Image (cartoon, rainbow, N blue to C red):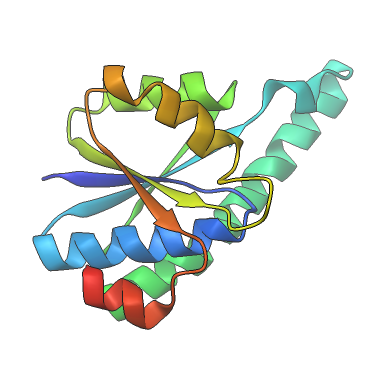
Length: 151
């Protein structure tokens, strides 16, 4: 089964990327893999404090994931999988793509402010020529109706 890989973060544009991935998966018989990455610099404290912070980060990720997963199950009949990795953002995304041969498309949300599409979109766009899969960039300001029409 072909999976759409979406990166879960706290950005506004993440919502449209999630919607797009779920709608495309529902319409094509695919699946959705939701990847969340815990940056290593969050845990450069004493070992005990770092472990508590790591566990709190995982709990936040699971809570955030469940909101999207419920919508995907209820509205799109798609049961997403959650993947949590620790490390630097782009290398971890690339590692996940390399490790999971079912991932067929990377879906990213693009920011709509003056700063540009966002650092993740910018970094991965530059590397797109060497990626083994295509990237779909979903505008953050696209309406739900427009998303439905194009998926």
